[in-house]
Amino acid sequence: MQQSSKPNAPERLVAEAGASHAGLRLDRFLSDCLPELSRTRVQALIRGRHASLRGATIEDPKHRVKPGDRYALTLPPTEEPALRGEAIPLNVVHEDDGLIVIDKSAGLVVHPGAGNKDGTLVNALIAHCGKSLSGIGGVARPGIVHRLDKDTSGLLVVAKTDQAHRALAEQFADHGRSGGLERVYLALVWGAPRRKHGAIDAPIGRHPSSRTKMAVLAPGKGRHAVTEWRAVETFGPKSAPIASLLECRLTTGRTHQVRVHLAHIGHPLIGDPLYGTGFKSKQRALPEKLRGNLAKLDRQALHAAHLAFEHPATGTLLRFNSALPPDLAEIVDSFKEL
Image (cartoon, rainbow, N blue to C red; front, side, top):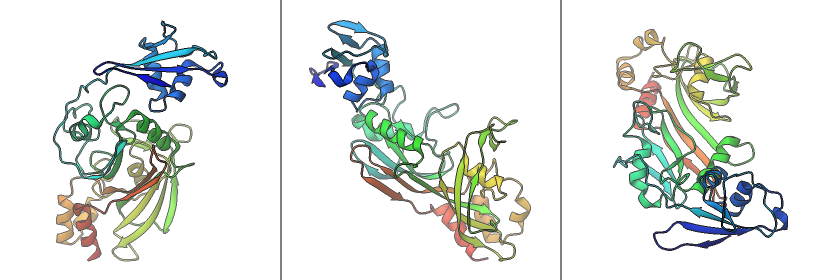
């Protein structure tokens, strides 16, 4: 792949097909020659009339490559994002040319959506990263490969380039089956499981009667979901524990997975407004100090405490850990006094 460009001009790349490329689709051939662009991005460029062969525009990504053909691909200047950057404080754990790891605070929405067009992590990253965002799909924006609920705190990795976005997305889609991806949460729940560890294998899908909730559904109705858990500590009498701190390891990544699975086995997250209702009587029986701390908690007691993945450029396994934030640590300390 040869590159040629002039200042303030679109970048032009030229690739010549060899014998080994015979019969390949054009989008496959160009994405193989240009690994920093995703195949989806290459397809969009072809359909946008940015690919040519001997001066003739090619618009079909399925066009078959022949040995000796020289294809030109023009990369338009990266567009500015429609979203505006906002100077929102971020706890940056790691940052390099390809990605950034954030320890997200509770209350921060990851991506703009209905009712949350501003004040999100994406807005904050646009401002923080500035020109280091080389563009995801041709737009200077951060590449979100996984999300945390608004009121879940903890570790989150975001891509800054198309190449990093594609590589990280592949790791998360694989759920760590063939690589180093690990996602571990700390969850403060009501009650205590009878065993010290276990796995919840139950399909998750949209709740049949509530658009804001997910639910465990009958086999074949929801998406495959597995959460492995381990009891870190239990609180209260051994005969009738009041609460537990669980370590939950994801082997899939579904919306609200940890929250739904723990509620499904009868141990919902403390403070969860969707899946943890029905424990008000138990809360009223707690000591005054603990009741006060729980009353101040305005979110589910869930924290993304460990994240590991292979760096998309170097292949190095990166590992990050985050301690419980002060609001959850204070509640744990109060439970220990029971």
